[in-house]
Amino acid sequence: APISVVERSLAARPFHWIGLITVAAAAIVADQVTKQIVVSHLGFGEEVHVVGPLWIHHVMNSGIAFGLFSAWASIVTVVTAVAVAWMLGYFARAGSRHPILPVALGLLVGGSVSNLVDRLRLGHVTDFLDFRYWPAFNLADTFICIGVAILLVAVFAAE
Image 1 (cartoon, rainbow, N blue to C red):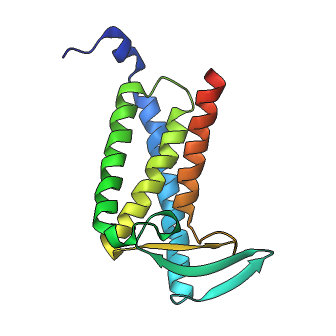
Image 2: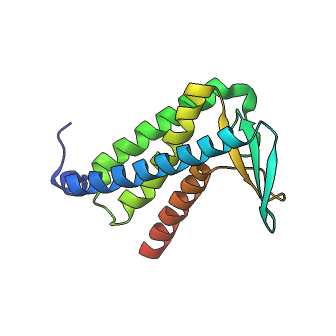
């Protein structure tokens, strides 16, 4: 079907793509570097107290948040890849809809891709931020949550 004028006007422009790619790349680099530091300095299961409730605890997670669906790691990998493809397709069609979209989706895509790279390369994700009252997580998880929060704020602020 032909693309309407309205759909074309909402499509991501090159500067939107530059924003999304920059944010996603920064998220991937930050997440991968911190994971590599943890892996190179702590054995699996080892931990170091940082301050207050924060510990660095080397955890291998084959599932998603909280270790859910760890028995279905290959399905999680496929669903993640499909989700990233969908986000990029949505951005291509609607990237100029809101000025915060490149940042929010950049964080979501970057976090998702970084964890996806780990799943494909290692068969698991390295988690290390441990507040004791919450399951361990990594920067990619944080970026995903921040991206979702930004999208929610933008949606509710627009109403």
